[in-house]
Image (cartoon, rainbow, N blue to C red; front, side, top):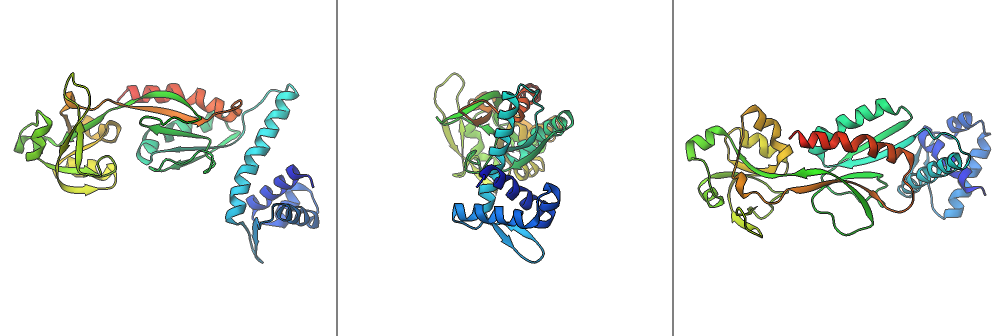
Length: 301
């Protein structure tokens, strides 16, 4: 069995949802298409496709195998082109992931420009506040905000991000401007539990090492930064978020950053990808395209 051929046939069937449609596009007889997929399933000892009278769909095992097969075929194609000395036009599907809010504000605009510049590359942008595993989740590249653990990942630093406390001008006028973290004890707060699940906020005294944990009085606890910023802008309480999450409200004047002298060290931001071997051209051109643009966007904050 030619496994690369079988992989290509499986992917075409899965993409078209039909054996007959795959047969027509490939110019391969329908019985041959069915036989190749059956041979691949027997070789793997698992069911890759669920067949009904109207549609063909991947099983869970099939989806995992198809993602790996797609990557393998792209790498084989690129290797052959390089070996033949041909000019390599970047192509294929690029899978990116980023935190939801950050991705919508800063990655999506870069991706749309990238698609216009590289018409042979398609992008799947997975926005999730959970750090996806690059290998297990079949992700090519990820945005990571925060200190990176030791790993085999390759990282390109694109900037840093402050963690800020902000409050509405009305709240400050009514309760006074907090000048030290302890002043928060007398101020209503909106707690973004992703950053502070225990309702304590971290600060650092000017010139001091280490951090100080300050308990707060949350009038409202929310699970998303957008909700925290929205409530804080309406005077519910002060909130603590990453700077990009409140930047628009700060520019508009509906929120004011306070306690800036007591902020913890800024968090690094990286674009990361799996290490080992040469980068596929689709990833290399995205890095070249995105790094400077992302650095400029972050510097503008």
